[in-house]
Length: 211
Ligand SMILES: C[S@@+](CC[C@H](N)C(=O)[O-])C[C@H]1O[C@@H](n2cnc3c(N)ncnc32)[C@H](O)[C@@H]1O
Image 1 (cartoon, rainbow, N blue to C red):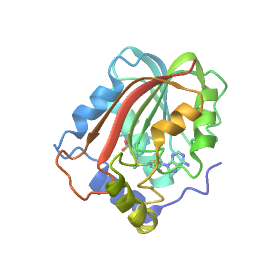
Image 2: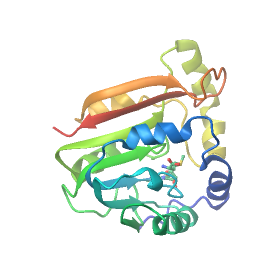
Image 3: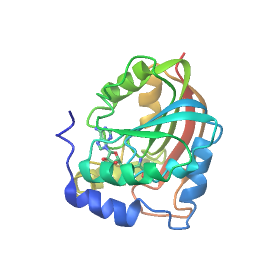
Image 4: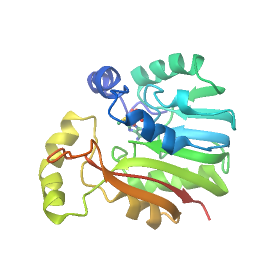
């Protein structure tokens, strides 16, 4: 289904370098993202399954959608050790292959920066969410400081080519609102704290409702 997402080199780099808790607060942010998630959860772009350990017993089933074959294999391994039942599926954010209104919660963590078409992805995530369900997001975004945003745009082409299609300068919260979600909670912050020129430092973490 998602043969177009194959980044073997980036996937291995990501798994060994970025897709790990390096003690800088990544773990706490994932815990905050998933706190009190309940019911049937769909995590899209689940990577190597780094977040699985943070789901709690209030989650009855986790469906993890991951298009990249190497990362999907890592996710299957992580699923075996997860505290909740996990099914790992092939699919993309714009084509999950899941039924309409299948989820109480949809989770995206570092994914809306990479999808080729944010509007198409968010349309699909909204379709998969039941009415009143939650989109939980933790994403890096375009800075609200114009000078920094210009720097993000300047570096975007190079960054995207080397970082598996990730874009530095997307206004993801605006895209979530444009897709028809209602943002209930959202906080912005730099990560790592104090980062000065890191183009993916501006972050947002929040919950949007499917009205
Ligand atoms: C930066 S990684 C984040 C992985 C994981 N969510 C995490 O928190 O570590 C981006 C993930 O999005 C996946 N991805 C890339 N294109 C995608 C698409 N079109 N739809 C869904 N996921 C995609 C990548 O394979 C990768 O697993």
